[in-house]
Amino acid sequence: MNKIILKYLTQKLEYILICLLVFFSIIFTSFYNQKQKNFNNNINNLIDNVYLEKTVNNIFNNFKPRYLKIEHEVLKGESFVNILENYNVSKIEINEIVKILKKHINLNNIKTNDYIKLTIDQSQKKLINFSYKISKNKIINLTSKLKSNSFDEEIITTKLTKKIIYKENIITNSLYRAAQNEDIPPSIIIEFARIYGFQVDFQRDIRKNDYFQILFETFFDEKNNNIERGEILFANLNLSGINYPLYFLKDQNYEGHYDENGKSIIKTLMKTPINGARLSSSFGMRKHPIDGFNKMHRGTDFAAPLGTPIMASGDGIITKSGWCGGGGNCVKIKHNSTYQTVYAHMSKFASGIKKGIRVKQGQVIGFVGSTGKSTGPHLHYEVIVDGKRVNSQTLKLPSGKILKGDIRKEFETQKIKLNVLKSEIIIGLN
Image 1 (cartoon, helix red, strand yellow):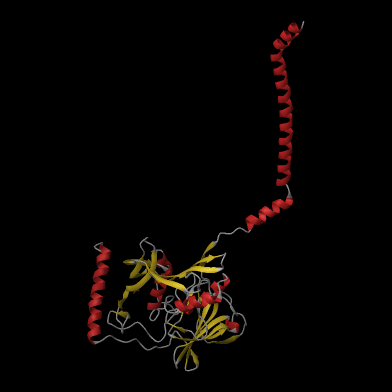
Image 2 (cartoon, helix red, strand yellow):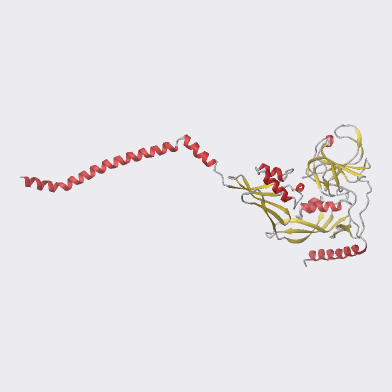
């Protein structure tokens, strides 16, 4: 009997084992699924936790790279000191930088729209690198010394290629627009107006179909970027069929522009301190456009678009740069013991223009505006001779010097070379 039962159990053992395996598999799977569900719920609850979210966000928001690279464009009125202070550079480092820069440039002549490059170690709150262009082909690079507030100094020189460019055009509207149409750089146009400003009134003297010619230098870097303008080597204005050529003489004692007879274009004052303007009100009695009664107009008004550059009509020292009541923003310049000039209603002053600064003839000192008692954008220009306001348009000014002797021979040689160069460029030989 026992043998029969044992034999039966042996035959059914295989099925019993399979049933047990299935049973435990079901139990294990159910247990695992419940654990996984609990784990996922815990993870989701952790992710959704608002405090954890704020903590993570705070960590990432406050995470900054150690080295911060800055490229700062210089704005009007800024100096090296206040730019560096705005980036929290220490006073010791600023003083060290200023001391080094003084050896290379005039710190009062920092140019608007130039760029200063900085690298700051945010963890150490330390300036690592300072870079600034100190000339058309030189960059000063200052690198911080380890465990010190001093800097290693390096001057990087860029190789520049000089090109001589010739342009000409007929004037149908204004000289400025005709020059712009030939892609002549604005700085060259301003210089062209400056050298002719001693003898030409750009509003009254220029007629439709007059034309200009200009031969000038420009400098390109290795990437063919136009870096800086050079000199105007030759210029000519044809006014009503008459040529007025000017030639540049490069000489330590006589450098400048001369007419074909070797006479310098420089006079005590320029005839017109603004390019492309219209004479809108002459010197003399007139009905004031705002006050409404007749009064003496002791200056000359030139109507021009807002922002047109205004030039100093002669070398001198600025005696005032600020608000002049009815004259709005104005600049006053003392040229010598005899001559003073006033420029009123400016929209703004040029960079660095302030009382006590010495300016050069033709230097941009401000821009046309309509500040003060004014009905529209224009320049009110006054010339004062021995303390008395006079008509700038009828004033007879001393002429420039005339070249003589050996320097005259040098000028004549230079004039021939420039005429040949101009002709070669025109016919395509150069």
